[in-house]
Image (cartoon, rainbow, N blue to C red; front, side, top):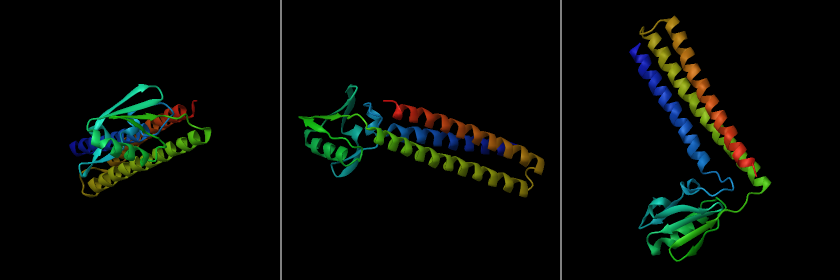
Length: 187
């Protein structure tokens, strides 16, 4: 029984982490509104190593369609601009001294549809990860039954609990996807 409680806690943790990972992926999808999260995945070549953008400057949103990066070291401004241009986010930074301004252009209808499809792919990959967690749990339960730790009836009961956890997680992923899709497609 205590082995199942530990297993269940581990499976739930891994499923929760999948949801958090999807939310992080979603934060990097541009929706036409400025958000500091848009730049979270960008790394800058700084002092001979790759550093997250937020470790070389202060990222802020002074206007609804503008992101600003106040670079701490003036010698890093060009590296920050290059990292933003190389990020494939379709952003065009402009520097003004130690300040890098990034205007967020409005999204075209085609780009919105494309972003919705990308969000769908992220969601599907996360669902696959959750199903893999479920599979791992089911295999461990079968091993426990084979080793005589639990009976076949208990195995069925625990399998149902694991399936229920999976169904709840998939439902949460679908809700997050529909929310993101609405955010992307709303002009």
